[in-house]
Image 1 (spheres, one colour):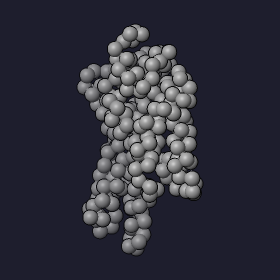
Image 2 (cartoon, one colour):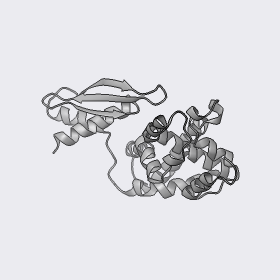
Image 3 (tube, one colour):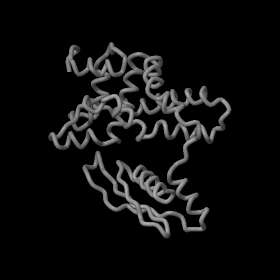
Image 4 (tube, helix red, strand yellow):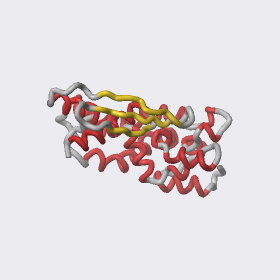
Length: 228
């Protein structure tokens, strides 16, 4: 991508930041399937972006909930930096169309739909903002796109698996059981199908880029069905 690449200009408009070093944002958008070397892909930036995001969201939480105990703050932080939240924000700002992916058109289409990849790229983008413009540039972006999610619900979130377990225990039922049904897709972008079951209820299945995320989604769906 050249310094006048219209795609980079579009990304800069989305992020509200003009890069002095456009190689940073190019790398942040590049999946390892599109380049010969991992050094040219987003992995290292993703590693740093994960930490920068956690720091900034933690700072926002400390200010927004000055009397809340550590346990409740941890639950909020976990949700706000989760792969689901990252993928949702990446989708909302239209980041997927700017990702640089390898393989055929069909593979690219599937990878753009993968919430794990989209979340990783967004973390890499946050690191690129931090490295190019300092903490202030990263903070401006994070506060802009996380503020409403942070203040939208004043009740600390509860993990769906914990909530389902509490539902079963309150009714003297055995704990929910989870089973991996299938694992599909390439090694770098697997899709897990997981089933969860509670005695007396029909099993519920869900898919995700990891077993943990698939289990959470399955638990959420089953709990919704049980509490209708």
